[in-house]
Image (cartoon, rainbow, N blue to C red; front, side, top):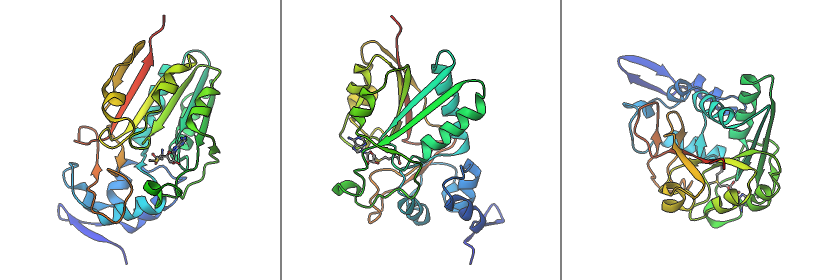
Length: 254
Ligand SMILES: C[S@@+](CC[C@H](N)C(=O)[O-])C[C@H]1O[C@@H](n2cnc3c(N)ncnc32)[C@H](O)[C@@H]1O
């Protein structure tokens, strides 16, 4: 039976939208997500426990559910940072690769005349470590099993590195900065629980400028994907309050 809720006097049937989201090769719009999880739409503000959404994220093994709007913006950003004909992206810690997969498709769509390369990597430690034992990405976009440091070390052309939800308390960004072929890196996630926290998110590394692009469309689950607890989650939309951030670190040309 379809989940139904009353919103503004109208009955929203969520089942059809949920079916669309079941297939991670489909990149949903913000409105698809809101229709699939109608309770999540209360003012587009920070809200509490939405069990269906949490279950969905756990089942799919993803921390951030990308949307059409989000990927379109990210592709624009990445293309702008790429000089010349080539657009090279390396995603590290890519999980199942859904974000990078959709980013590649969008870049190819936006820039048919340019040479697009999006390499997806992850050491595939998810499912092994205690923190990630519940995570097994349902999506498999042919992610290469490579450690982040190794992957970044292999970058030999001007490239933008993308890292979404870097493991908590880790900071891979010194490796990004150490390779001069990394022209920029993009951090996506919740700064309070992602990566090296304070310094990684808020510092301005020497030789880089920082562009804060607060995530207008990302839909994500806050915190580690511990489905046992009641971790609140956030649905963000343009202008909505959210802890999810996108920060872009651009190497200053000498
Ligand atoms: C919090 S998950 C984020 C996954 C995905 N980017 C997302 O946003 O849903 C962190 C990912 O980093 C990977 N990982 C952990 N340590 C790594 C390392 N040293 N090198 C590459 N990937 C690593 C894990 O396998 C896991 O897929």
